[in-house]
Image (cartoon, rainbow, N blue to C red; front, side):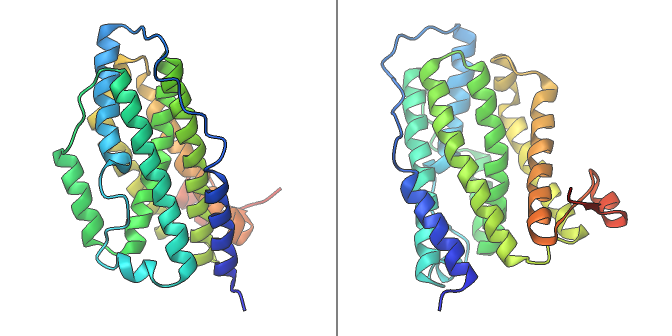
Length: 259
């Protein structure tokens, strides 16, 4: 007999398989015109992002990752399909770096530390951190698409954003299965803390480049907060029928009914 988890995973296996279709390749050979300062900043940022977004180990690497993957056939399939899309992002970003005449990045201090954290903690924590990266990456790619001024790179961002939307929804459904009663206050605070920490790391590494291509200082923080809050509210709505107020502390005092 199929469990609810089996049904959930089969749904996402079908999604990932279907999402491989109708993916027009950006026209990397289209005429290219970009201010030199902007070109250098964008090339550097995308090259470093290419390393992190599927350019490193494209699989779970936590100490118990294989145990998690082998917990069921469906778990193995959906996990591998998710990471296959991450590898596709790395391929697309490689095309953008070449178009910008950038230099590929093979290693950074931040990348090494991120891999150590992923290995040290368990698979559940690793997936939670990777979810945070998906949410923050959604903001990053929206900023690049809005400000790059290059149609092939904007088209690449559109493809990646399409995938990231699915990834975030997949993790939302997975977490709703794992926490049918919703998240308590401390779990929500922990989620926000990890999200803002991931955002801070990205901003420290890419903030200057993003400002150079035209992003305003407050845009990134505002969109990160909006993305994290939207995710938390969607988890609570699906599990408890209630959504937390704007502050996690206020949510404990006065939950809002769903209209």
